[in-house]
Length: 362
Image (cartoon, rainbow, N blue to C red; front, side):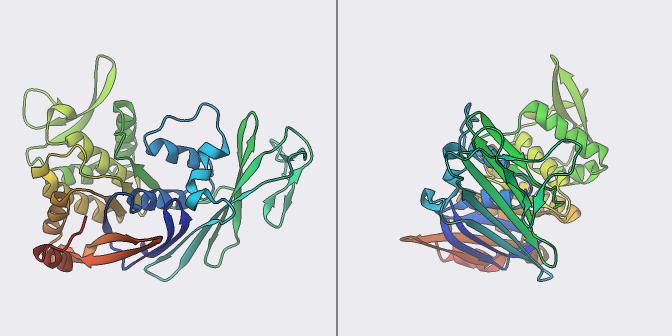
């Protein structure tokens, strides 16, 4: 669980430092202040051996996956002001003071040089000090995206995305890191994927605390199950009626809430990033939603980073984390002046006082 984060040269974030992080972190600020970029950077931070995740970030923005994958579409837009000459750097420190660092950089081989990675199925790859080496065979390479990842006291690992005229290749060692899940504010999880996540969580034995969390919103909920309607898998809830109700019929944004709670259950000791968390949730259910998130993230020791544009959502979070629960919550307001960005951090108590003074937090 991170206590400190620093992000450099990622999208609109020339440099951003977040300190005094909590288990549950709510990010606010005006449009174009970098809220979504912060979540995307964290998601890539937890995929240090998966440079192909840069393509998924494009989809999070509401765009269709590009039919012809190219560096311009897939990763140039990740760099501050599209300047690929300055690497992206993301560093984090956990509550024990241990540090983790990820550097993302672009290299451009000579246009006429014919290169390929010499990894062979079932054979040891040619390696050097920084990982798999390029050899002069195969179709031309136009660009290489490199992930350099290092944890305290461990050797650096290097993963690469190799762009060729006919597509991309991804190479590098597998790095074991805690699970991270990103939930977009523009695209909700589809029925089939939600059913897959439900099955994964049920099989892992984590469904009980999802139920416990949901009862903060629907006290009559007795159980959750998976059923099929016209061949479509649907998560259903038993609220004491003749038969279980599919989530869309339970109202109050239950689909979105279950999406969030299943994501938390899938990432014990990991991270969940939720963009525009209030989307799809009835405003009167926001406080109980935050209480459900508090229960679920506490059970799984999962760190939450969420964004919102809604002042009602901010007030609901402060109310949910009042009293003894306040220690687990932080509100971070991003403020931009010219090209400089800073984060102002509030505890639940100071955020409540700031709202009473009409201090802008969105």
